[in-house]
Image (tube, rainbow, N blue to C red; front, side, top):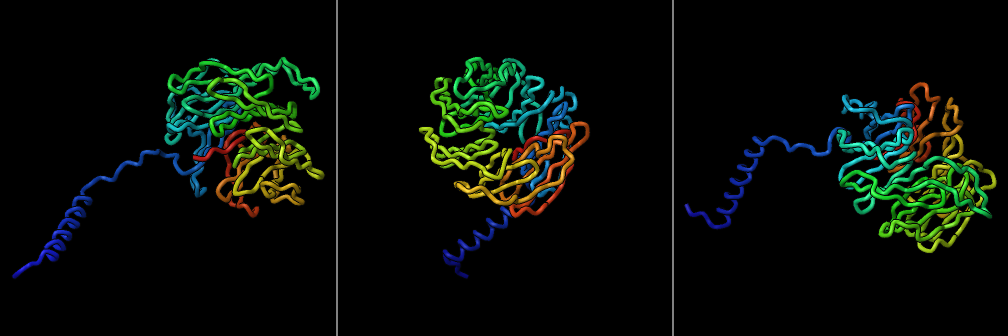
Length: 356
């Protein structure tokens, strides 16, 4: 019997496929590199002593105090856990400002890598750029007064610059203003210069010189801000401002007429989300008209009278109730139409959400 070339190739193909299939049956599955805490989010519990809760994306798995669980022989996270930030090398940095401490862990396994415990004084928020971490520090809180016509020069807040190879503070940047929320965008570092309603600046820092190269003045004391598509969006308790991030020019301002105490600005899918007390509001990202009604209002017995943590991401809204700091509190997850998806018990004083 003659076998032509096409038939021969077909037979060879079947042989090869069968061989590969048989070999694959004998192979062990490849290990998953990420770890137990992939595809979910962390809730940072401020505490007394800070803890971290992990929640899976499908909201079915909840692991409390994952740092202590993974690292039973390590020291704790320190007092008053403030925030978490990530780098590009699978590391998470947990800031505890009550202990002047940053705990460095693998973001997917939560195994302890190291601690940064020198060069920090009341650290608050951090961001990573070009192998360095930039961490805002409130220092001694010496100055809580602010006169818009005569800003004091006695602020002692600073930004610690941390080398991520040595995990040590290599320099500091003085701002002559408060230092709170911090964002990296297009190779520049933007730092909110307002705190507790005082101050009306956003500092633009050039990391190549570690100096403030520009100051953007806001109409009111900003409590949260976002940058997107070349624009900066800044929220105060009674206004919503939009700036050109490059030249600092104010493009628009919405002065709230019926809302007071706005905070927690988040931009998501061309919408601006923010909170007032225990309510969540949403409006078009570039709106100049305040929303008439709240999207949702949740029930709480918190002594603080307002939600303590807030996020909006991938079609969900996340709120954290601060509770009374003497017993475990809770977080709630909602759809963007305001429907409650789940209420989950976490730790003491949950104050933020960090997506993995």
